[in-house]
Length: 261
Ligand code: MLT
Image (cartoon, rainbow, N blue to C red; front, side):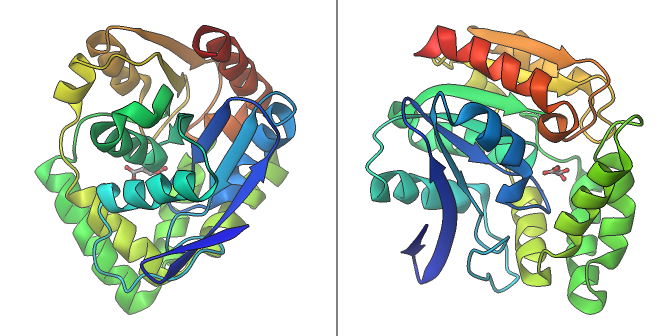
């Protein structure tokens, strides 16, 4: 399925019936990240999973910053185009940053929030500089160095070799301009802690005990400030907990849905 916003086509899966679940992938990945959720949850809910602009089969960006608010605006028009008024938003990592940007702007469309392996705080100054330097380097030399650096940190140590290969190839096939845009957008994201303090939506926070990129302590910090939230740290799961421990991840989503729907 496909729709176009501001001249950029956005491709997405839209499978199943019931309370919609909009799934937002992380960086530098695409919607195939959610294949185990589409397989395991679409019998129960309507699962909508887009490729963010610049990633997967969606249209290209020009390498300039795409802010998290801009990705969120794409998702807002996606919901319009599929006639969905309200959805549960599930974002992992960068997808979590986007879910928070979406909630900041379109709270009345959010029936529940799933914040997986993500954080509310912005980058440190050092982190910001390193993202901007990486964006520049991707433009000059391609994304190979970034894939090499990140791939070993995406899954827990016990992940099966075929899963590691799948993640590496998902990262390797993403295009340089989309990667540069996302790096530059993430570098200027604001602190969402104050937003969460006043959140009035049921929220599920998921982490992996082996997450090497965004440690469980960041998830605990969000749990501490969101009044109505539940925190689950999946044992032995790495950063992409939905892929690494798909059954456990789907189980916590199903339990959460009982609270929402
Ligand atoms: C992700 O998995 O989306 C990224 O690790 C997020 C980030 O770089 O902050």
